[in-house]
Length: 235
Figure 1 (cartoon, rainbow, N blue to C red):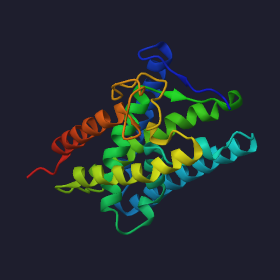
Figure 2: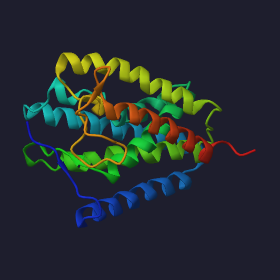
Figure 3: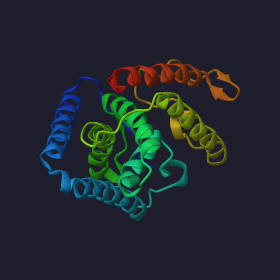
């Protein structure tokens, strides 16, 4: 198994990658406004199909190289769940909860990941490098397009429902981590990258979980509420 590496904050590589990612995300957002209303569904569904295609390619390339494992590659990280939502949201009728969950988790998780990137290059294949930025840029940009182009709004208690949804996911992931010895949602040990939301080393545990998980819960609740107050529907 190849070892993940962290890109140093504000390094030349970090600045280059952030600049390219922001440009392409902004271009996608701009193009969404250039598309006529009658063609919007085609544009959005095409976006989902591209994400589906890239995701399948990721797992096929990983599997063909013999690097795919249950321990590392199930889509149980928050950003992977957000990417799945991006893949299906334009093909379902009831979008509200999916949109709200994607909006908070995609933007917050995507921003944190891009600002503090931890990437694994399997067999030095740079597809995984590109896929990292593609996935996280997608989960940031698409919910913004849904909000501003499709005019969907956050519900009054959307932040609290999303917090509940994350903890349901946590309850599913914990036994999976226990059985597989995995680290999905990073609730077994902290990521190697310096993440400003991780307060603690994980050496101390509370109720079988690293101590930083409980600090993260508080930080997450505050972030969700802040995002709601910033982006809530204006009267």
